[in-house]
Image 1 (cartoon, rainbow, N blue to C red):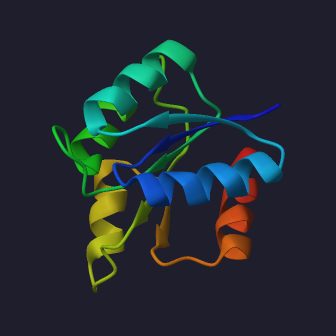
Image 2: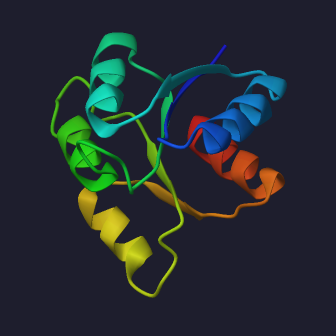
Image 3: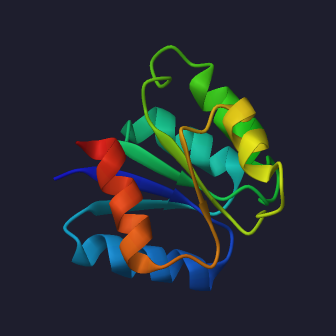
Length: 120
């Protein structure tokens, strides 16, 4: 079973992602801020990370840079799942090291398709 780490500070958004991903057959880990996301990635080595950008303590850009900067973790795909959807925001997530980008609000089907794209 593939393990996905969801780094999201909003309880409601975490619940939506958890329900969607567990129904699709994934094991889901959760973190509520960037620091916790980095620690969970180091401890559990997930197969994929869904990273919010606007997070407390350490934002998603810095958390992504730190995870991608760790030789033991740099291979883990990170998909930004963010409400930052203005021109240039996707490029900023990619510059930080995110492999993919999904804007909120997202359709469950498109999010699962993006997840599958990086896990096959």
